[in-house]
Amino acid sequence: MMRKCYFISDAHLGSLAFDNDRERELKLCRFLTWAAQDATDIFLMGDIFDFWYEYRYVAPKGHVRLLGCLAGIADRGVRLHFFIGNHDIWTYGYLADEIGMTVYRDSVVTDINGFRCFLAHGDRTGYRPWSLRLTHAFFHSNWIRRIYNTIHPWFNYSFGLAWSRYNRRHKHRQDGAQYLGEDREYLVQFAKNYDREHIDFFIFGHRHVMLDLQLTEGRRVVYLGDWIDKFSYGVLDETGFRLEIWEE
Image 1 (cartoon, one colour):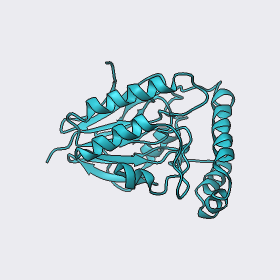
Image 2: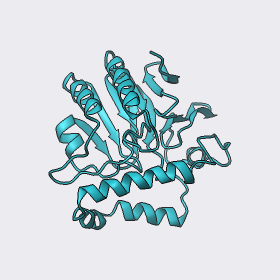
Image 3: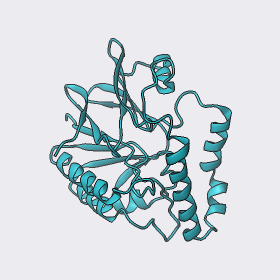
Image 4: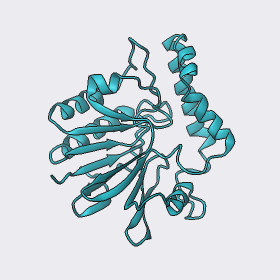
């Protein structure tokens, strides 16, 4: 059976850096409801939430409209795929058990309609300096999570959201979401140098840039943009992949 798959990434819902969080959440719900009319699969490619941390008996406050929308879509038989990003790493069963999503912690290579696809958020793919590798190892450590579980949720979320807001307003303010060119885009370089097998589409989030780049005949790399101000999405069906902007 042919599949019709939709891809989105980087909504960063709950961020303290933006003042239109509710509006963006409602718009995302409208898009998902629209896409679910003919979708077999919807791929959420990371950083859907600006900060997400689950305790054993506590789930994050907010996002009820999106979570309810996703649960309803899953109940209708649409397969939901959730790739953790660098902002929503810490999910340990809630999204899978309560919402019905399949959660991926690493990149995935899969066949969709005869196309070989490499799927990843993008923060841990390709070249990373040692400082960033150590940071990623720290945040993905089960021991660190166990220690973090002892911290009261009030401090946990206050710290996590404030840190994210600081990075958004200061660390990433000058660079912005701009395409840096093939030689400086580490995900493009990763796709160029990938030689384990033939890949038709490398599909990434993380960069907040819209990009559909033909590398060689039959090999393309895609950046999905974001749901902060671009409201972009990808579609993969029997004809191939296309990157679009959703307009109501």
